[in-house]
Image (cartoon, rainbow, N blue to C red; front, top):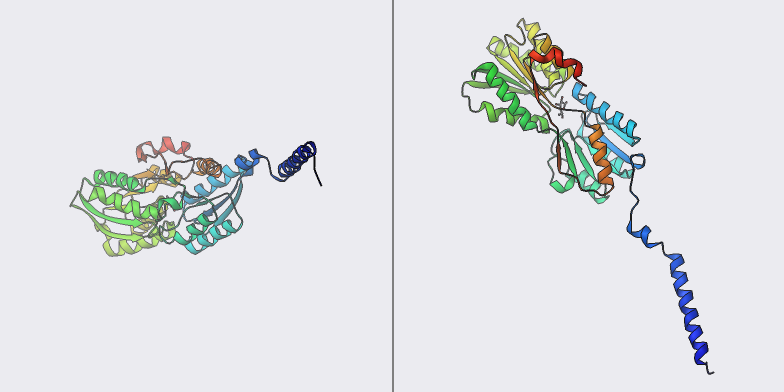
Length: 330
Ligand code: GYE
């Protein structure tokens, strides 16, 4: 059969039309392929693996995160690990299973995170470290929001040098063993006091960042060293408050017979300074909620963020405590 050239021409055109319109109908538009929709706070689902409620600082931190989520309209899945790493690991796994957009975590200790962080990485869920660092390579988390713990330790060290005129016996109430703030505050303090051979750290014991443990450890240290103790360096205010109680029960005057420097600058520290029982507190800011969600949104939208968002902090002394207390938010 012969096909005329005109018919062939129309056949080819028809063929093109069929193929082209078919493809166009089946394929999504180009715009849809190349651009992911930008998320807003209301679209954001965030998992937060909190440590627990060991201190005033922690309670303020939890409140800040929950309030910020509420105000911004973010869907927050919040888990309290009751100070146990295994619970935090479980929480992260459950956030991965629920396919949240971003995971925030305050790692109770520095080590032991690689496997579970790798699982989040495999699921393409970014991790933001909030408040405490983890000992993992840089590419296991997008950013760290929090303090410079070594600098806090150095600040406490400088204050202690002044209080003791470079000479005296110090006992140290360490935070949770192997936690980032305990490690940083421990080494920062020594970077300063190490230059003063007459300042001796005669004991260094963990009070796990709690008031009860701070009191318990201090009871024991007072039994052992009694009035030989010139000063206490407490890694947080709660342990300092526990120690103050122990000193009073022992019959000495906290803030006078035994000088005390602690970290956090929570309201209870201001009250103790006003009462003359605490000599200084080094600030550590727990109000990280708004910053955390701001970064979580950026990260969820694929924006670049700095690797460390450092908190700005200062130190406080009894002289201004009464005037400053009303301005303190935690
Ligand atoms: O100093 C302490 C809390 O990780 C910086 O944890 C935080 C510390 C804070 O229990 O009070």
